[in-house]
Length: 252
Ligand code: PGA
Image 1 (tube, rainbow, N blue to C red):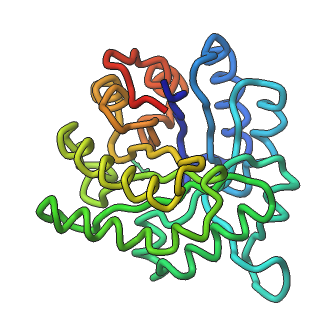
Image 2 (cartoon, rainbow, N blue to C red; image 1 turned 30 degrees about the vertical axis):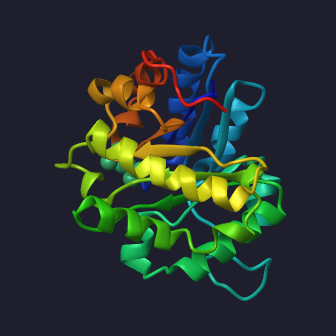
């Protein structure tokens, strides 16, 4: 059985003080979870506050973005070494909102994955079609976004399938049949690139909430959940993280 990975990106929410209160509330709520890997991705300004509270707990922390270069004249940007120094375990890249708002392409995103892995952290590479498509087209779109996969260290990679149409307020999570279909195609691609070696887990994100978490995390091919707005309440995130698995998940 894979160990499910359950995490949240807070996106552009929470000050450092609010993050501190959130982490103080979350830590005891998740203290009993030993069969899942848990993480939170605060905004850059709140990572140190999260570390302060979560150090030594079963909850990892990380970042939502990174610059691909090591250092230098990049006003306002944050390097992988800065994140590694803050004890980040996970760094997200390629989120739909970044691709949309900053026109990030797969080549740039791949360079960010390289930087994250160079610094010993795990990249969470988000993929997902930007509009509703037929299944075959959606698979082709997502596999296209994985065109640089072969050069990554899959031991330090998580693929997050997040169709844009399922993300954000007013949206609904993708159905389990759909998720199973796309995840199976991603797993096939990942296994092909791994050539018998370690394969990256594939997690689902997009309007995950308490009602959908159990079905989604139990869905074959789903190795975990990436939660957005529902996790802004620590009690709801805790309930999602405790969602029971009622189908055996994909064997390793
Ligand atoms: P959402 O965000 O859960 O608020 O839809 C998910 C995501 O963007 O990862």
